[in-house]
Every structure is written in C-alpha cells, then in structure tokens.
Amino acid sequence: MKKEVKKRSFETFWLDTTLMLLATLMLLIINVVARPSKDDFKNVPSAFTLLQNKNQKDDIYINLLRKNKNRIEKILLEEYVIGVVAAEMPAEFNLETLKAQAVASRTYAARKIMSKAFHKGYEEKKVYLCDDFSHCQAYIDRDEMRKKWGKNFEKYYSKICKAVKQTKGEVLVYKGQIIDSLYHAASGGKTEDAKEVFKEEIPYLKSVVSRGEESCPKFSGEFYFTYDELIKRLKTCFPGLRIDSSNISSQIKVVERTKAGRVKSVKVGNTILSGNQFRNIFGLYSTEFWIYPDKRGVRIHTRGYGHGLGMSQWGANYLARQGKDYKQILLYYYQDVKICRLKYR
Ligand SMILES: [Zn+2]
Image (cartoon, rainbow, N blue to C red):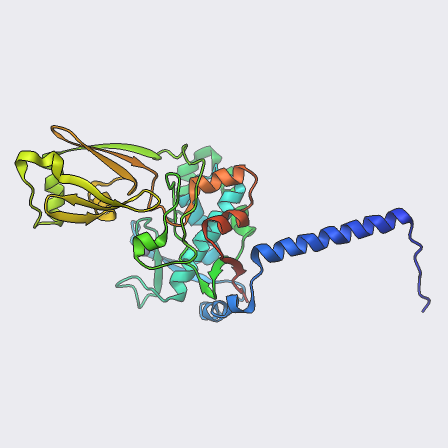
C-alpha cells in the first residue's frame, strides 16, 4: 500500500498544534477536578453488583417506601433520582444546580444501600429508603409532579430528566467510600462543620462560605413564644426542668455557638439543651438563632433554613448563576471528594 504523505501548510500546522495544546489542557483540568483513582472504586462496583437485577443488565432497582400511600414501590435508581430532585429542589433552578442535586441525591441513596441500612420493620422487604424528607429524601412521582407544576409539567419534567441523564450513575466518593452527601436549603452565610454537630471529623463536610441565599423563602424567620408555652413545650421533653418563675427572662441563654455561628447549647433554668434539641422543640428554621426575652415571652430570630451541613441548595444555585458547573459546585460544598460513576453492567 502506498503511504499518503500530506503536505501541511504552515497555518494548518499551527491550528493543529493549538488544538492539541487545548485538548491536553482540557484533559489536565478534567484530571485535576475529578479523576477517580483505583482506590475510589474499591468498594463501589462490588457493592452495586449485589443490587443488579440479572435480567435487567443495565439497571439498578430499589424498593422505596411511600409513607403516605402506604405501599412499597420498586423503581429504577435513576427514576428515583428524578423524583427526589423534583421534590427537593425548585425546578426553576439552573440546570447545573439540578445536576448537582441529582448527584447528591443519588449518592445519598447509594450510601444507604451500600451500608445495608434497612428501614426498621422493612428488613425482609429490603426497603432502604422512604419518601419522607425528614427521614430520608423527599420523592414525588409523575402524578404528583403534574399537580405541583400544572401547565409547566412538561417543561420542568424534561429539565429534571436532562439533569439526571447528564449525570447518570454519578456519585460522590471520598477515599473509596460513598460519602454522606448531606444538603440543606440555605446555610445562612456559612455551612456548618460536621465536627460541631457529630463530634467527629468528617473531612468532606467542612464549613465554607455560602453566598447568595437570601432569596430562599425561609432564609430568615421570626418566632414568638410566651413563657407558658415555652416551658410547657420544654417540659414535655425535659420533665426535670426547673425555672424560677419570678425572673424567667434572665434564665434563658445561649451558652455556646459554633464557629459558623449556630447555637451549640442553650440553658433554660437548670437544664442545658443542644441547639438542635431547641430547634426541634420549637420548629425553628435553623440552629442559627438569637433569643430576645421580653416581659411576656421570647422572640426568636433565625437565619438560614435546614441543618447547614454539606451543600446549600440556594447557595449552589447562586454559584450556577455565576457560571459554575455542577462538578465545581459539588467540589465546593463537599471538599476533596471525587465524582465516580456506578457501574451499570
Ligand atoms: Zn426513610
């Protein structure tokens, strides 16, 4: 065979060289951002092999407990992620934010399945997840999406499908383990360090600045409780609570705050509660709160919405509007993680 020798012009040579340099640069960037190593996959594929339905070569199915519907549904993991993104995040958000949410939600599910953390009472039915936002992740099916979005159903549904498809199988991994991909609506300016909440270091859940969350509907809150109501509520959880009724206002104090500004502990009379216990008892939007006692009761001002750990959804949307893509968003809120793809085979 005759070898064809191309005569290349000077311009073509430079064009080729520039393109090659650009491609090398791109590869370098991709590698730096999220190239998983062998170690990252150490536990991932084997765990997911167990989940695969042999008849459905490409798919992973999960059993989902629909709490309100009182039934268990067997659905594809990717279908589940669509329903979670639809329930957990406003569909109006930027596509890159929806993609970040899809990866975080898939990661959350994958971790539950891998650690074999079955729902109490549902071990035999192999239910790992329910659709209750306060326990696992919220989830809605297509009928519920229709009700939620009305005439925008087609538009939003296809947008969310796109976000899930473009991140198919992607999960967040830290040192070979699928991470605990916690997320919340708005941090109030700074996400929380996991060590402050769980008392143990979680290397990928560090406090970071989170801007642009102010448009979150519950970003700031005002609550008021009379002393009667306050003590009644506290006593249902802390029956041993004693407080001098002649001078209540001076006996309610925030004792300690985290570096990010959330309440670590509150003292009421003779009792010390964690910021979280106090938040739950009074249904506050977050543990970043300030207590202002007056003659009749206490006014409580809150900032942020949710526990403040991991990704802030409103902060993520702000980053997307600044031009960041979903990988940059995820790597900002979850430090030193890698984005790996589950093997669907
Ligand atoms: Zn659950």
